[in-house]
Structures are given as C-alpha cells and as structure tokens.
Length: 116
Image (cartoon, rainbow, N blue to C red; front, side, top):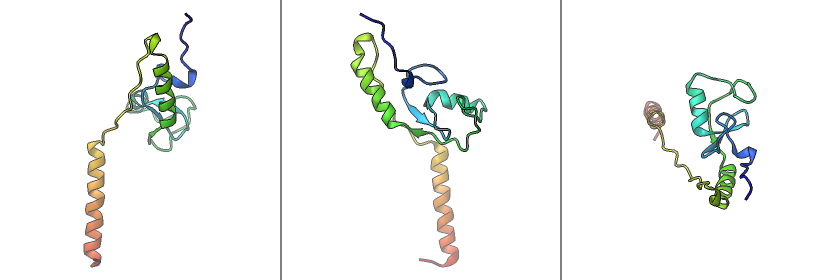
C-alpha cells in the first residue's frame, strides 16, 4: 500500500491543508475560507500568493473545486480521509442590516418622490 498524495490544487496555499470550503478572491487565487478569513482579519490587504492588493474582499465559492475535493475524499476514505461536507454559509448580521437599510432608503425615496 503506497502513501496517499493529496493533489496540490486541493491544498490551501496558506495552511497547506486540504481545503474544506474553497473560495476564490479577486486575485484569482483560491483559498480555504477559514484560512483567508484569518488572513484578512489580521489586517492583510494583499493576496498571499500574488502579493497584489485585493480590489475587494469578496469570496466567491469555488463549487467545482469543492466537488472535486469531495469526490476525491470519498474515493480515498480507506486512507482515513473524511468526506468534506458541503458548507452552509450563514448570512451575517451586518449583511441583514445592509439589506434592511437599502430597502428602507429605497422606500423613503419613493415616498419623497410621490411615486407609487
């Protein structure tokens, strides 16, 4: 029985661990959500791989890569690899507040303009 080799593109460039929730940044590089969250929360504003300043901090889920990791994990359970679950990204309180503010502001504009 040989040693299990994890495909390089399944590893987070920050933690070097198997990604569970891969997300892609504006730099085009994909990271595990938890690792890049920690990186950004520490005040880093550059991509850890390319060193370019990030245009925004949007994290786009990389569903294709996650599916590939899940399939690979399922095929390698005999090596002790656990299947990576599909993450459920909860909406944050700040996002709810921003949505409510936008709706309220739009309603005020409609009221002020007398539109119906």
